[in-house]
Image (cartoon, rainbow, N blue to C red; front, side):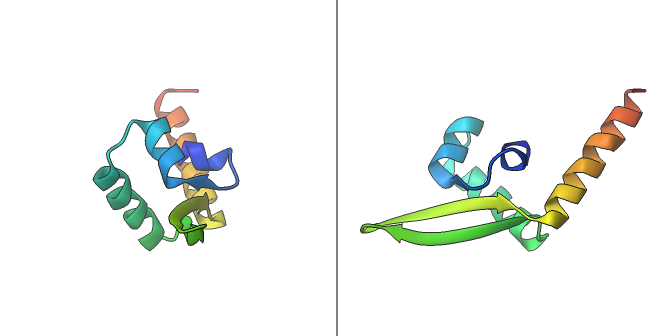
Length: 77
């Protein structure tokens, strides 16, 4: 989520590399975030190659901000 908070769209390969995640791990997490309506998923073809990209929704922004605020409270900040 932190990657998506500071980028408009991030494609699957870039996200996978940034997080050092496996294909399966990233796919399962992105599916869960999409079901929660925290991210939007765009699937398209670039030439003949498929590309999946992600971006955070307003609901996802709000939830992530609340999560960070709660962590800061827990740390006494």
